[in-house]
Amino acid sequence: MTPSTTEIRATGDDVRIARLAAAAIVLSVAEAAIPLPLPGVKPGLANIVILIVLLRWGWRDAVWVALLRVFAGSLLLGQFLAPGFFLSLAGSVASLAVLGLAVHLPRRWFGTVSLSLFAAFAHIGGQLVLARLWLVPHDGVFYLVPVFALAATVFGLVNGLVAGRLMREIT
Image 1 (cartoon, rainbow, N blue to C red):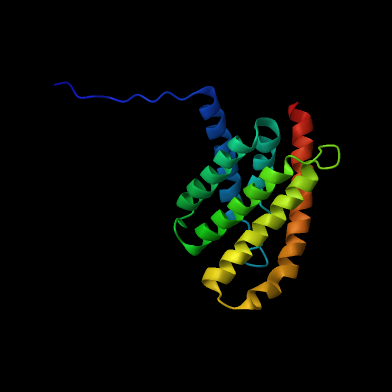
Image 2 (cartoon, rainbow, N blue to C red):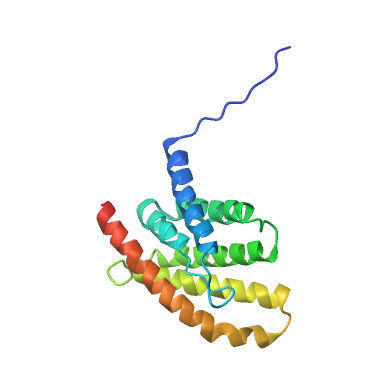
């Protein structure tokens, strides 16, 4: 009897998704090294890559890149299965759900900046809901909403502008 072998060949799409996920992972790891004034408030630089993937290749590819970023980034940062991993996953899933709906809005009125803002608010919302349900079983966690909403507005705006600029340069 000969041993059986399974050969998996990467397609061009697989390679593209891996490269884009690697870019998002690098941005996540670099972002983790930036000292920030408030815990949990991050610029979300990897979301620039996610927005570009969403607009160029669609929601399915954006889901792959985002989830690969969450899992691989948490492994590289030593946070896999820690509360930070689950908060990141909850934020990403909420963000992807909102982007999946928002991508069907008329592009004439909803571009990269509005999509980035929707994603940023959904991300924060997903994290706060998980934190309330699991980590902080008290409604006091919602006192942080104004701070996180301000951060989501600023970073969502900046990331959307950067993604829009990169989209114009790419095409």
